[in-house]
Image (cartoon, rainbow, N blue to C red; front, side, top):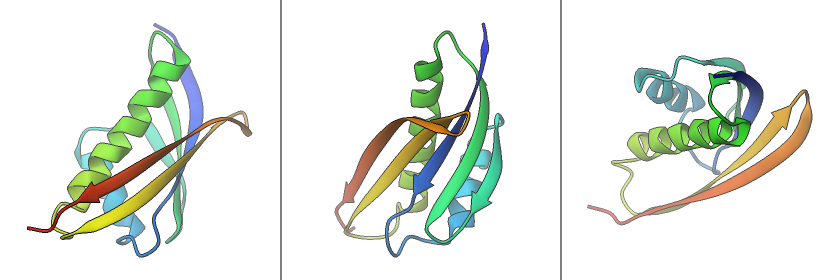
Length: 107
């Protein structure tokens, strides 16, 4: 299967936890094909080299992994609604975007 290179920029919701917590969760969950480009309180930029049958399947898997990590990070946050925005770049040009709304009820 071919390798695909792409960048995912995650715009974190206002008031999100420390950006490093999301990265820790992502890498602890087994993501081993991403390298960190930039981390700020507002966003995380990751470069991927991922093996997949199709490029957009690789991108979709990378975004889903980050969403799973975000859900885990925020699991004890109580009642909340947060929006995570994703921009996907290929050779510096935007090729797609995605939005994920995390809503959970307090315990």
